Length: 464
Image (cartoon, rainbow, N blue to C red; front, side, top):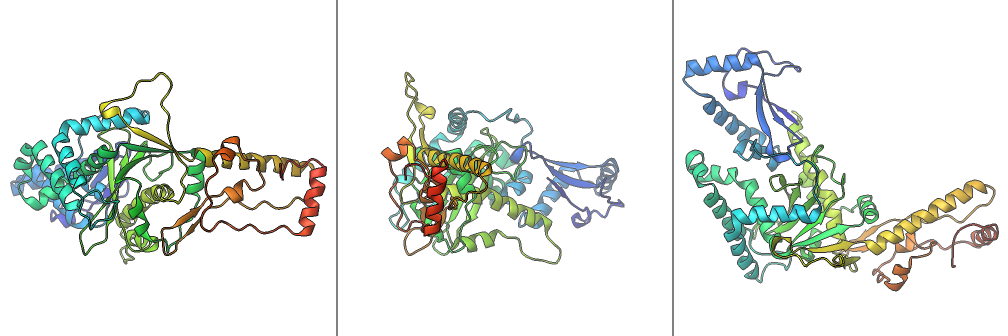
C-alpha cells in the first residue's frame, strides 16, 4: 500500500513537480511486513531540494520526520485504521525478520506467549487478578474493566521502553498514541493467557459459514455470551484476504468495555505468523449488526477520501469473516469437541499448555456427505436426462434474531435430508434448533417420479 502525500501541507513549498510515475514523497506500507514496515521514500530531486531547504531553515531531517508525523497524525489518522497510523509512531522496526511461513498453531502460539511473557509477565499477573475482580455490573463475557487493563498494559510498556519514552515522547498524549497498538496487543495476549483456548474450525463448516449472509437486525448484545473472556480462533489459509502477502493464521478476540456512556467494542488482534507480526483492529459495537457495519463505512464527502474508504474496507473485510465464526460458537448447540492428545505424547507444560477445541467435525462430515451425494445424483441425471428427480433443497444457514440470543439453524435438514448420515452423526445427533428450516413437502407427482427414479437406479434418497 502506498500513501502519497503532497509537500505543500507541510509548509515547505518546494519547487517540485509531482507526477504519477515519480511522486516527490510517499509512504510505502509493505504488505509483506504487515505492521512492521513503513518507509518514507522520496525521489532524488525531492531529497536535494529538502536538504537545501533544511540548510536555509537550519533544521534537520529529524525535524522533518517529526513534522511529517504530526501531519499524518492530524490529517491521515482519522481516515486510516489505527494500525496504519501506528507505523509513523515508532512501532515499525527493520530488524524484525519476516516469517518464512506459517508455523504450526501450537508452536506459533507458544512462541508468541513466551515472547510476551518475557516482556510483560508482571503485567500479565496483574491482569489475571483484575479478571477475577471483575465488577458484577459487567456482562460475563467481559473479563475486567478496559480502563484497568489499559492502565496495567501502559505501565508495562513504559517500564519496558522507558528510555525511548524519555528521549522522544515526553508528552502524555503523544505517549498514549505511540503505544496504542502495542497496548491492545498486550491486553489481548494477557487475557488469552488466562484461558489459552484455541478453536480449530472444520474446512467445510468454515466454507458454509463464510457463505452465510448475516441479517442487519442481528443484535450485537449476543456477543456478550462468549464462551471465554478471551479466545483464539485458528483461521484457514486465505480466509481473510484483504492483506496480501501476509500469512494471517488466526485471531485473538476479546470484548472491551468503553465506559457507561459508550458502546463496547470487539477487539481483534490478527496473528501474522510471529510474535512481531500482530495486527490489532477494533470494531465498536452498536445495537445491531447493520448499525455496526454502517459505522465502519467511510463518510460520503466530495473529495472522495480514498484513504478512509481503503481503511474502512480493510477493517470490515477482516472483522466480518471472524465475526461469523464467533457467532457460531454462541449457538444453542455448537459442534465443539476437545481435541485428544496423540497416543504416547507427553502433556505440555508452561506456555505450551494449550486447550485445543475442534469445531464442526460432525457437521463437516455431514456436509461432505451431502456434497458427495449431490455429485453422484448430478452424474446419474446426466446419464438419464429423461427421468426427472425431485429437487434438492439447498444447504443453507439462517439466523433468527428474536427476544433472546440468535439461533443459528444447522443445515442438517437441508444438507442431509436426502443423504445417509455418517455413523458418528447417528451416534451423536445435534439437538434441533428452536425453529428449524422448513422444507417444502413433495407433491404426489414428485413422489411418483422419485419411485420411478429409484427403480432405474437413482442413488438417492437412500434409506428412505
